[in-house]
Image 1 (cartoon, rainbow, N blue to C red):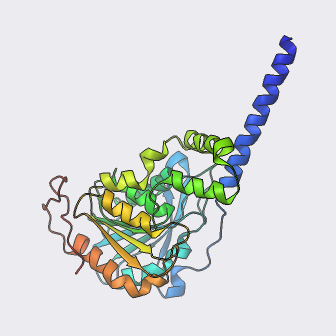
Image 2: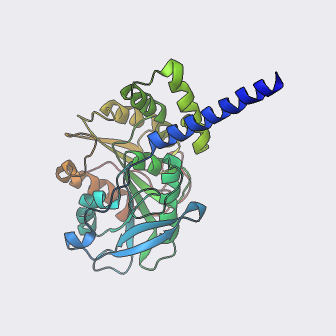
Image 3: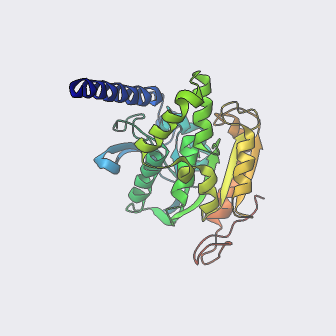
Length: 310
């Protein structure tokens, strides 16, 4: 009887371990190679390696500002399954506006080191690795650092802004409101019934990443962010509905979160061209023209007061 029970328990543990491995494999991000580089846009850039969490090395491009000794910097983070090269369309207008740019490959993406898994919190850690690197670089205005992220990278940027007082502004491209909703849509698309298996998948994912979805949700982060936020979202986004942007705006501190609606789907990097003046206006108001010592509601001395986009 005991032998039988032990065999049944062992078999159950093996099945459980196999199920967990399948879950991680099914959620693994595809790794794409860089399709081009800043040089293809005529931009002088330096390829650097950043020291990331868990002793991992991250690949990044640093594009210095032209014609100035010290410049504000925008840290750019791609979305799930993408890499730094896919965010290059936003670099030229940022550079032309006098901003330096740091484009990072998250772990398990591009030319950065791999991990058994990655997640929104790990994307945020990788952004922080970029901020730490910038704090040590000459020619960087350490008091004027901004984040620009897409999708998961946008959610990570918002999470990072709740932890780092050196983040002065966040531009979010196509951020989702809550990871649980994203996971539920993924499970429905994979025809995995939530009442039977889906709830277990979600519980296991939260255990693996070491955080509850409610804690890392952009809805939570945007309410805690202590800097101005611009939400840029396509009105025809079929991956993350535009209503998520409106919910995020409503969750933020009054006057600190603005929403820029634009035509297009989930990847707005090319459609964004026509709306870069608004994005640059936001960054100009929060970085270039920010006056030290001004305080936004709920902030602390030295925080930047948000300014409406001109």
